[in-house]
Image (cartoon, rainbow, N blue to C red; front, side):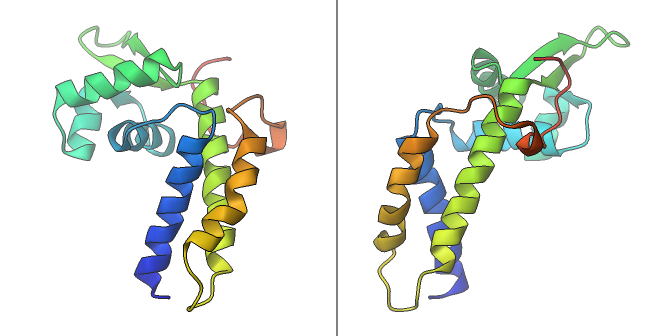
Length: 153
């Protein structure tokens, strides 16, 4: 199987496991913003995120609204420049990303086991039961909480 097909199968399996689980179903834009906030160098502003992702500020605001409803991010006025709103990390957002990273790793394991002649659906069937047992993001063990947060839980 080509490297491109394996990459796409990894992405497909991760997405399918995500939508089959109990965790909220995020759009690609929402997930890109969430990852940018957690993996990128802060502080994060709507203007800065819009520039980094090359999308409009209203599109960023709409995606951040949804992430805020889920408590995955928090917005606060910048004390130094009251015109700016800072986007902050939260523990629920860190928990979600830990859960999502586990999905990627499980999908990666399954894709790595595929042979060139094996149908791609085989790997997906093998991980379906795992997703059901994982459920929604919850309190992760301390050793797996590698995502930084800006505020206390």
